[in-house]
Image (cartoon, rainbow, N blue to C red; front, side, top):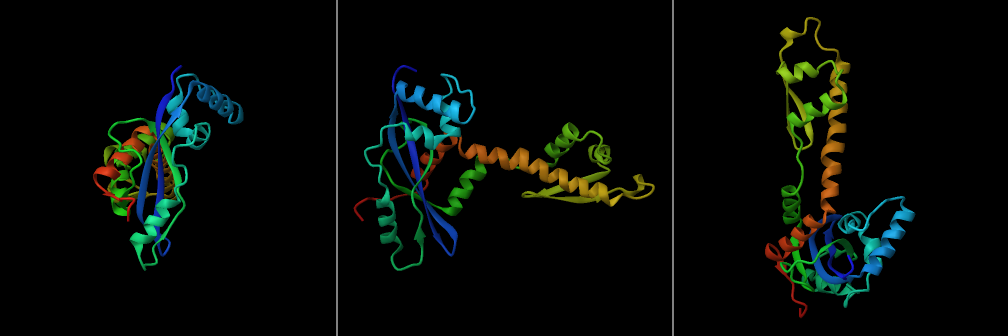
Length: 240
């Protein structure tokens, strides 16, 4: 990586009302990251955070420490994004819809699919829809595999495998939908059901929530988010 790398920094501002997010503004700007910058930030991160990034770890560094990477770049031509708040106030008019400060959503490699220095806006529903299409969802099959991997001695594992006990889930909640009690001479110890709930929470935290949180920082997902906000959202002209 001897030549400068061109990156896109995606900035985000939320509008809100009654403490609920209403809309999201996105503003992509180009930055250049030199080989010297890369060596310096890689040394800092490895030293301060006890990491071991190598010369080909640029994408991982952008994902894990975007603000630290951005801090080593020359500032973009427009590094003061208060104009977004000003535009929002004009758009909101007399409503009580407020606006957050701008935040660096993340960094990703340059793409000619993204219109730079362009402000776009999408609704909270559109943002949720985008993330839903780029996230993991829990499943009963994966949950049983999780138990088999981590808790092979669980008393109800075989019954979950063979369908004596069946489960269903709605969003991130699991429910026991059927039990063939003829297979349980003495009934079921309630403590085993409590374990089932605890295992589900572990599964969702480790295999769903953590994975989805990491996906939001992935450069590929950020690039798609920037493109989505421009193609599916509203482009906001600066001359309002």
